[in-house]
Image (tube, rainbow, N blue to C red; front, side, top):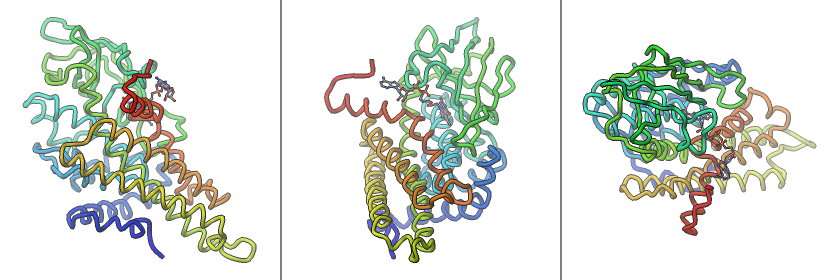
Length: 387
Ligand SMILES: Cc1cc2nc3c(=O)[nH]c(=O)nc-3n(C[C@H](O)[C@H](O)[C@H](O)COP(=O)(O)OP(=O)(O)OC[C@H]3O[C@@H](n4cnc5c(N)ncnc54)[C@H](O)[C@@H]3O)c2cc1C
C-alpha cells in the first residue's frame, strides 16, 4: 500500500529541511492537537491563548517573515506547515494564518520601525495575539465599499464602524483595522481595551467551530497618530496581506483532504459490507483513486507555486488558481470520503464531516471561489467581470 505522497513521489521534491519542518509540525499536531480537536469543535471553543506560545515556540507564527523574532523560513516551508496544521483542523491553520500572514504581515510590510519592534517579537512568540479586520457586515467580497471611517482630529484619529467575521477577534491583543480615510483605505493598530472598541465572539457557527470568530465594533475610537500603518496606502495593502494568507490555504486545504482520505481508506479496509471489505469493491476503489489523483495534483501545484514564490516570481492570479483548486477539490474529497464512512461519517468520531464543514468557510474566506474564478477570468480574457 502507498500513501498519496508516495504515489506522487512528493518527498523527492522536498529538501531535508522541508521534510524536517513538516515532520515537526505533524508531530505537534498529532500529539498536542489531534486528541482534543473533536471536543473543541463540538464545544465551539479554541484555546488560542494557551496554544499561541506553543505555536510560537515551534516558529509557526509569522514563520515566513524575516527579523523581529520571526523564523524567516521559505514560503514552501510555511506552506508545508500550513498543510500539517490543517490536517488536524482548518481552525488551527486559520489561527496561525491570521496571526502570521494577516496581522503580522500587515505590520511587517506596512508598519513603522517602531511598530514592528513593539509588536512583532511578542506576536512571533505567541505572547500577543493579533486579528485582521477587513470584512464588514455589508462588504465581504467587495471590501473597497467599506463604511468604517477614520477622520483626523488634531494629531489623533477617530474611527467609527463595524467589522464582522474576524478570526481571533475576541482574544486579540491588537486588531489591524482597515478604514476609509480622506487619503483612501488605511490600516490602524487598535490595542484591545481602547475605549469605544469592543469585540464580541460570534456563535452558532456550523463550520470552523474550533476557531474564534468575532464582530468588532468601533464607536468613536480615538487613536494616536502613530496607530496608523504608514506604508500601506489604498486597498492594495490589505489585499497584499490576503494574497499571503491565500498562499497558506493553497497548501492547507490539502491537509484537510489528506486527513479525510486517510480516514476513508482506513475505514474501507476494515468495514465489511455484503461479506467483504468495502475497500475491495470497484466502486469504492474508483472513488479512492479519483480522490488520490486530485490530492496529488493539488500537492504538485502547491509545491510549484511555493517554488515560484520562493523565487519571488508568483503572480496573484497564480495564487488564485491554487486557492480555487485546493479548496474546491478538498471540499469535494471531504464529501466523497463522508460517503465511504456511511452513517459513521456524520459523527465527530471521524474527521471527515468536521473537515467538510470547515472547508465551506475555507472556500469562502480569503476570496470566495467565485471571486477567484473572476480573477482568473480577467487574467485569461483581459475583461473585468466583477461588476
Ligand atoms: C469563519 C470565517 C472567518 C473569517 N475571518 C475573517 C478575518 O479574520 N478577517 C476578515 O476581514 N474577514 C474574515 N472572514 C470574512 C470573509 O473574508 C468573507 O466572508 C468573504 O470575503 C466573503 O464575503 P461575504 O461573506 O460578505 O460574501 P459576499 O461577498 O456577500 O458573497 C456572497 C456570494 O456572492 C458571490 N459574489 C460576490 N461578488 C460577486 C461577483 N462580483 N460576481 C459573482 N458572484 C459574486 C460570492 O462569491 C458568494 O458566493 C471570515 C469568514 C468566515 C466564514
